[in-house]
Amino acid sequence: MTSTLSAPEIATTPSPTVTTTTTPIPIPTPTSAPTPTMSPTTVLQALAFGGECSVVLDDETVSEFFGVPMKPGTNLLGGARVLGGVSCTWIPVSAGEGVPVTMTVVPWEAVPDSVRQEVGLVPPCVGGSVCSYSERHGDAWVNAESDDVEGAAAAVQNIGPRAAETPGIARALSSDAWSIPDCESEVLPAVREALGRDDIGPIQTDYFPHGQAWDVLTSNGAAGWCGFSGHSEDVSTLFTMDLTFWPGGTLDEDAAAGDDRRQSFPLAGGVSGWLYPENPPNVASELDAAARGGVLNVRGRGLDDAQMRAMVEAVLTELG
Image (cartoon, rainbow, N blue to C red; front, side, top):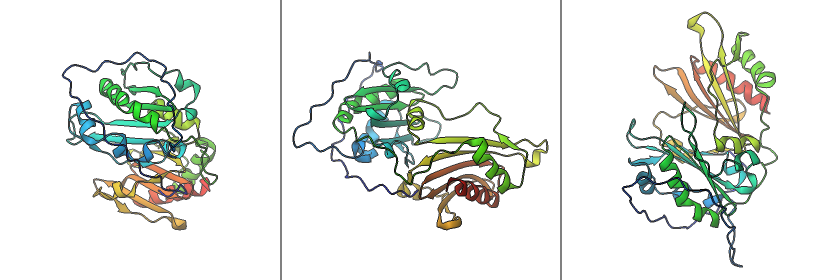
């Protein structure tokens, strides 16, 4: 995904020292973290932790917290980053062992009141809800989302003091970043026209992105989501899709390049696209389209490459 953001200075904060414990890590009682005292020589970086996931936590430390070997996932350079923060995902090295975790740090100034009220509260983590735990450390909001709430809390506690020293600088989205479109009045007509179908409507599911980090992003116009499906009774034409908008975002091309499934997928207007097909071939699974205003991520089932291309180009045209 392309962006007008300049590359941040890489932080030189050393990786934390890991202390292994055999007892569960307790969820802390929330306390008011003091604002860090800045010396005259302190220069705040534009992005929390310099925007570098390897500085937030190293793989060994993440593995200690979650009890299984972990590795970096593909991280979108959008969302938290365009607000002056950083968001990083780690996944188990072996599929089926352990659970992913996403760590997000943004300047406290960017956090809405509704999310501030959840700081320090232990999430229920039942019924499929996101286990989202956060703390305030100085001018930084630190969040972890994982099904392992104890590991998430341990990770938050570990990076919190260092986040207070490098909280990033809160900022608004760039002037050329997309505005989040309305799903039914703006995106849906474009999708219907591109696919030549009038039976498309809101997706019939209770799934939608949620969690504290998502609420921070959407409150700042840094993320949005729409879900659609075909409502035909002909099962051969059934499909579902969800579109996630990341205004001002970019793609971590180095990380994406390591995915063997990744295929270049040029789009109209010189927009860069990357397709991640699923099996069998020619069934579009996921597509990232990086335009000047941000990144559009589309996940679909039951759409071929030509349909995916037409639909994405129509939505990008609507976004401008």
